[in-house]
Length: 59
Image 1 (cartoon, rainbow, N blue to C red):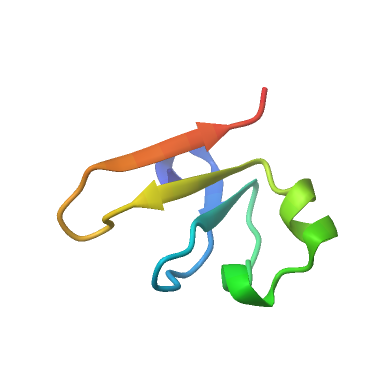
Image 2: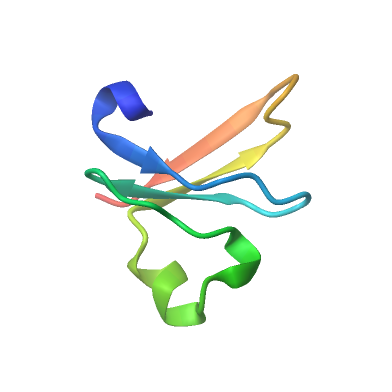
């Protein structure tokens, strides 16, 4: 995702990773407010080590 211009939030067991277009530092999912989660450009879910991973990006 970084090659496509997205910043990726850190992993948090059992939670999605946030995505934002541009160069940003994103907090762990558990530390984001509902408003901050709503403002994300997308999220990644799934097994980040072994797959599969699902990426959902807002249009």
